[in-house]
Length: 123
Image (cartoon, rainbow, N blue to C red; front, side, top):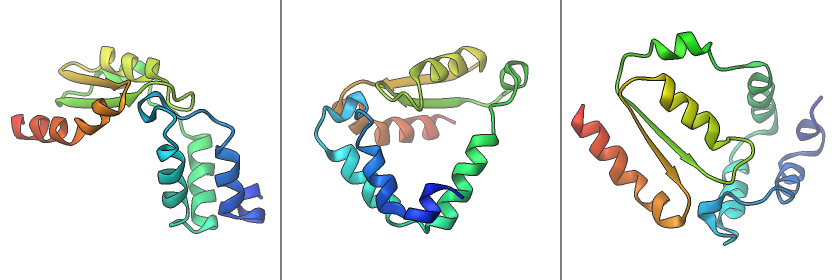
């Protein structure tokens, strides 16, 4: 049993405090607030299933990824050890016709909605 199931969402929210905020959030506390707000919408049992699935899942092989034949938009942010920029960069290098954007500051995140809209309109 995961601690999440035994102790609940609030224990997970407290544990997240040990991790630094990704760069675009500039230590504003907003990342933690948004994360806590989002986590509180989940049931502990459902979230535990998601975590178990993520723990045993892996990306497809590099060869399989390189076969992706559709335009691809990859959005990443720096400073997140759980989702490293290097993974986004590698995916961008493997998939042809990829647009990669890495947010390093708040203004970059704010641009994502327009960026996604432009990407979809161009399809």
